Image (cartoon, rainbow, N blue to C red; front, side, top):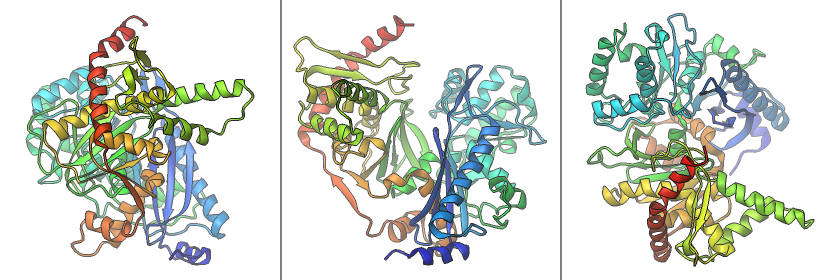
Length: 535
């Protein structure tokens, strides 16, 4: 039974609400939850990254202003709904896009502009570290950015006193503590699941590199301390309270949870932190997370190894492209309809076209699409060209056309997941989908089930996103019972009785997607030629 508005007002005024804030790539979002983890208010701030001298970045003044704007929008929502302000909270949690490079000197001065996960400027360092560690180090990881700056002989590297991520930076500003959750840390440097800390053997190898390069520090001297979900990660300082709320209304002393990355909050938001569970987030980009029972047998450049917020090993398939090209084609249909003077309801148009795809041939009838707005790591493309091709005798109809674009949105994800599920024999009991691809009921869900040949569920809370997942992690810190694991807390306290729809994979759909991927792989040379000849 839900609370009344008056009960929620008293809960907020009593300091029992919990706040989660996540810095996404296009939006900063805040979610306030009650003591049952039910969202009671929200705030947001739209923003965009900038290409500055070839580096994708968010300027510091925009990070600060966006954070304040998001919180102010949340306060406005609370005042509008409940006629009160926010003075105290039970807990706060911060999340953000993982990876990237924020380096500070001993006085806390930012040494170079923030380098985000989107940058692909660390190919040399990522390859060298992967070989050195015998562990896949993707270009977007923080350690790859650090080593690349050292290899580039950048003058600032000797002055680094602290290196962190965006979430780690905000946490530092709020609490004065240089630390982060293990899931976020696993996107900075490899984690040993046994110790829930940076892998000691790899740290020693990198310290040798630092010494040979003449750096006056070791890795652990400049990297954040690692905590697991539920640990106390400090309290909101007076300066931190002012940093988030200019009005001075918010009081200091609030417990702050270990900050986490968007992958970790996605796992929390979909109850996918147990071994043999997984989740797929599908929007502008798409990634899959599967909690592993054991390490993989060898290194795969397509598979990133990260952790859950509790420190358990996760196989991650990260793909840069998902729905952008699909959306572009739907907008073309919108334009065509509007040319006839028809007013278009986009929700209805998406629903109609998505459902039409279900009528298509299981293998798309000889149509192939590449949705590469940008490069794609799984298929080893540094840049991309959206491309649609078909055989002369292809079955060119609307159903197949839409089906191929839905397949294309998950094709590289399937190729990466096939490594884990088919080559490595990783077992998955459940997959939960969330994100824009699943808004049309049943369609994206059934396509993903075919791609992975596994049951796919969509929860009613999936739309709340990472900010809600971060609020749940903060609640766990202050509500957990002695010895209660994060997995048990989520299953027994957060998702118990939660409605979810599950679609089992159709054998013919799975077979058709496999056939599509065979053709997709063969025609990758066409995509490569398109890139080469349209520069």
